[in-house]
Image (cartoon, rainbow, N blue to C red; front, side):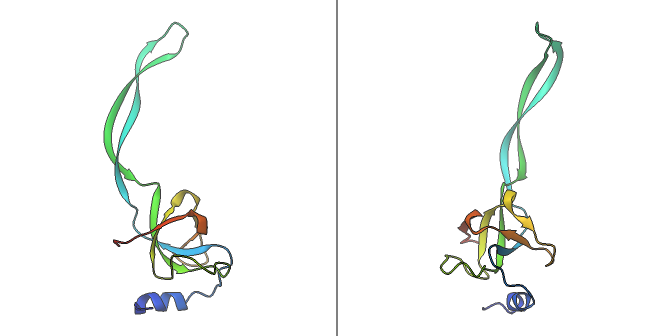
Length: 119
């Protein structure tokens, strides 16, 4: 490992991961999306249902994916494309906070979708 801070953090982890990757999540990634919202008109149709108009606007929201730094790789993975210290992209919906190690998450290896080349 080239980074002394990363080496200190990794050496301080007192766990051997067996099936999940231990990740330090980075700041949320913000993306611009068009969001369509329903606005009630106050009118009711012939069936008794409220009528709505729609309004589309562009908002900056958190991405469904997150980036993080790999801290530990499970022992069951013998060959993988990423290593400790790599910045990965993963589906944050399925990540689980790991409260036994501060500010870390457990990510299933199959939820890791990319290695970041820019961060």
